[in-house]
Length: 352
Image (cartoon, rainbow, N blue to C red; front, side, top):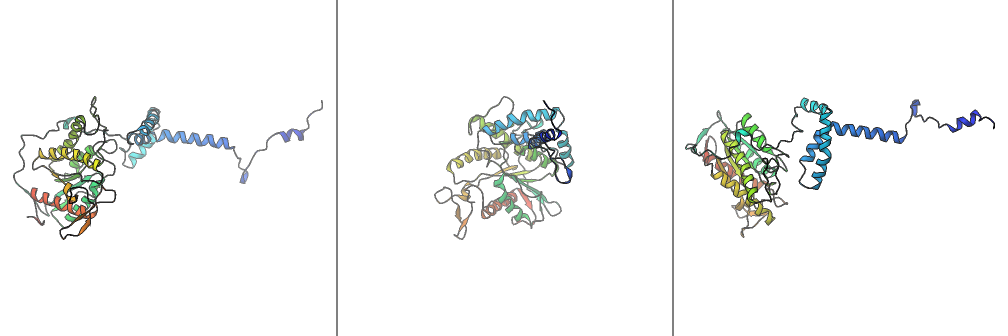
């Protein structure tokens, strides 16, 4: 047989594909491999953040699947030290705690959640002036935002009251899920660093479920409203109150309102009953502000519009049937100011 011609051999060899400027082009398969490799590296580098995002998801199968995937990923990332670059960057930005899942409700030193019986209630109203202002902190879930903004407007012209920052209202948080946001840790930080003497809080809007994180080892809570659930939620309410009152603050806890959903209102009643009873154990140090009948209609049920003092109908509740309009916030703020005036002597306030 004859030899193959050089021209025929050259035709069988695939030509190199080059782009503009003579750059060699790669196949689509090679690009996919590179992309997958980059994705894998990114997953390992960001595994701590992914695992926390999975942890704080709502309870359900999606959370279970996400944890099953990100848990091993986070472990491998930590073992191979691939989480170090992210940790270094977070530290440089002053956000080193972003990836920490903090579920501590009460440290060992705060494990006693009962109010000290031997400590008498304050018998005198401490006086605050422009030179010695009352430091006021407002915090809670999304329900606190509108009332707290009204409170800060009320105190804006009172030199004897000094607000501690802006309203600290965090959406989708509460006392059930410290893994989402740990209010127990936050209250301890604020009391230690800012030393407020008055703390206005509102929690519970997102706590009407049968699931909690941060439970003591071996403890379960069963369904919402069960005896075990009530005992654990009471422990959490008491922890918040004790942290603030033992730090020298007077606590005003705004109760949850009536809502458009009757079943939700019943669940809120369960939470309110716990808060009210815990505040009653701390006379002069904690006060429960019941908002239920502020926003009830003539029949005692939910009303979006309520008559004011002049007989005019005023929109009090947002269209979702849960949150407040500004008029409702102003009403709650006025009641909060009354409680502060009962507990303290505040120079320049309406109540001497």
